[in-house]
Amino acid sequence: GGGSGGGGDGDGGGDGGDDLNVGTSENIKVLVRIRPILGHETSNGRSAGKVVQRLDQGQLEVRGEESRHKLTCKFDAVFGDESIQEDIYRHVSDCAVAVVEGFNATVFAYGQTGSGKTHTMFGPPGHVQSLAYGSSPNEESGVIPRAIMQIFQLAGELKHSKVSIYCSFVQIYNEQLFDMLRDPDRASPLEVHEDPKDGIFVEGLSEYSVRHFQDCMQLLRMGEDNRAIRETHMNQASSRSHSLFQIVVEQERRSSDPMAENVSLRSKFNLVDLAGSEKWDHDQDMVDARVTEMTNINLSLYTLGRCIASLASTARKGSTDTEHVPFRESRLTRLLQDSLGGNAKTRVIATLTPASDCVDESVSTLKFADRAKQVMVFVRRNEDRPVDHALVQRLQKEVAHLRTLLANFTATGATGSPPRLTNGGGGDGGGGGGGGSSAEEGYGLV
Image (cartoon, rainbow, N blue to C red; front, side, top):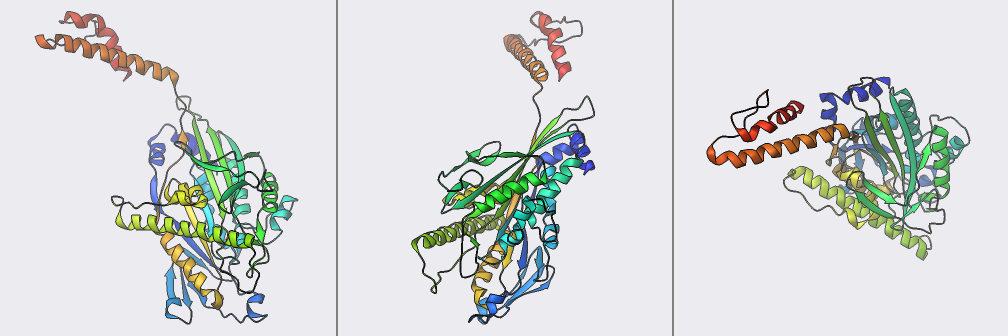
């Protein structure tokens, strides 16, 4: 809390800040959450058994009827059907801390439709709406409300810092990006671009300044009301678009030491709820709009899987043998490019349905999660130090003096008598006497 703010000020003039700016490499951390069997999975003609089970805090097993559905997997953390929202957030809360310290971070939920992604990220149906109308966060709150609350708490504890927080909300529907806060009819698609300094961004996306937790909840409610949803055989209100809620934290850290320079930090926190993969439903009338949605969702998730596979392969082979990563083949992967292969602390929450008739999708999710944990990301602090114009002028003068000395040395080089600097400004070499004093002052600057 307060120590983080003070550390930020202290880092401005010491070696510790330089170490943070160099950055570190780390693996993407992967959590797996197994939801309970639901009532409709054991009624109305379905008699699904439980084939996915947690063994311990980092291990699970799948015991399907076929041999390809029998496996044991290890991950950074595994949560069974008795887990609560706080258990999940405890393992990703370091991302919120990192964002306030100036690092980028991403948390995204991946899994088939109806496996509990939106519940994990937001909370149960109607929860965000209740928070927007004044309710306090409780045990049902998902990752996003908890992360927002923690960021405001940490930012409020910073000392010697001016903090500004901004939020935006975008969805990818049928491979097009739409502003969830200004474009409820999905009429104005947006484009993804890349900036050499700030990385991936969406051109034209609205960004709102927020001062309180409640401000963010109002934006979340507005965005969720505008999200594309549809009933599927797995879920009455299934998300048919990928959503990304982004929090930007800008800080001006002022040092208490008058000799130390101020430091500006700008970090991004991406909170992503992916649409779930879906199989063709032979029991329902698959109208054209639903077929288009399903095709685009599955295509974007397939491309995400290819990107993860390429990055994992590169990590196994080492940095000297890199593979092409098809980030540009989907809007989703292009938007997540920084999070997957760039500068961000990344956490993946893989959600599973334990039902036996969903074992194919569960195994597919586990394969994706296994590849994801092999991917390396490079995390560095996003620090911007202001330009000292007086120092720049002094250095420019120094360069001019050095050029003069070099010219004089070149001119007298044939006689073997280079110019000589002395305290009095004179010297044996007449050509160097006039410039000796000023050049020495230059060296003093260095």
